[in-house]
Length: 185
Image (cartoon, rainbow, N blue to C red; front, top):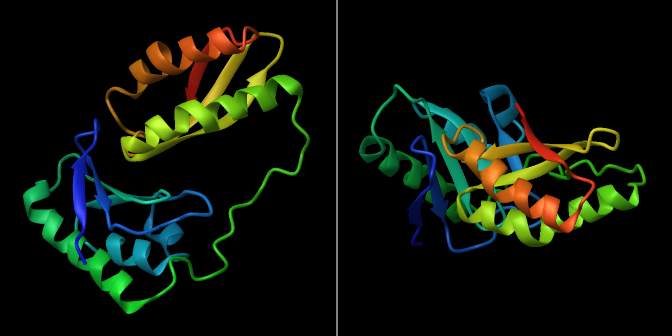
């Protein structure tokens, strides 16, 4: 098994591409060892020194390290070993069914349009950088769209610029009701 790595715009996150599906049914993020107990792979990665976040995308795993921690050259071999051991063993990604809760509420036409634009144009681009972007809320009166960044994008120094220069401009162009975009932490 050959696992490729790619840098992300976030210097504290590295993207690992195992050459197979990782989370085809929806991305998952783990920000603590307690959350990671839902996944044998995430839990094993959190056992490594200086790992502070694990994100499973459709075809990749993003690992976030402590900003003051060890260098990637020290951490990378350990992470590669854990990922390889997991996939070679055939262990499932999640301990339970791994289903991501789906919002059963009906969306307004504007929210549906926003989510469609996120899914078709924005999320694929963000995924290339090892992260994800999720709809949080839209205030119809003010036009403020709130989005949640995950994975490598969550702590990235350029995420604010990505939201304002990229996402906000695109949203305002295609969905005129959107006046601004804010990140939910």
